[in-house]
Length: 174
Image (cartoon, rainbow, N blue to C red; front, side, top):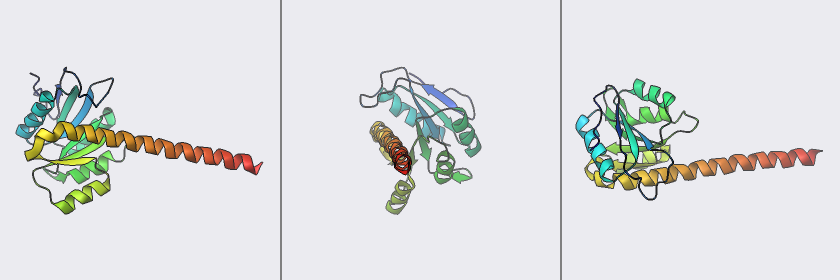
């Protein structure tokens, strides 16, 4: 079994098993786990291993390290606890959303109210999951990646349409 390495402030957990059926990638899924509880991190790692998800899992509990990791590596997905020492997932969302191609962002929380859940979804989080329902984690990851891909496809289409409209306007001026 793959267990997180003991490096601090981040831990990598590679899984060499086959990827989930619906998530097709040509590389292991790169997941950044923003979590201050080693027990919760181990539980997430176990759920990913049981799902036979081909991934690397990097853990940090520092907002500064989180920002540095996002600058250094291209992550596919962020799993974030809501409350961490000195900051929240909303602060991390603010950092992550500044990237040109921000990764899908999933909130993992011990408890979240309906209003808070609606608010985070409006902000642009791909999904949220209660920590006492981690058996659904593989499904939530799959859905978050699908939502992110649809969003990128839509943004690309809008940009291409704008370029086409500009070319047409340029042609009609002359």
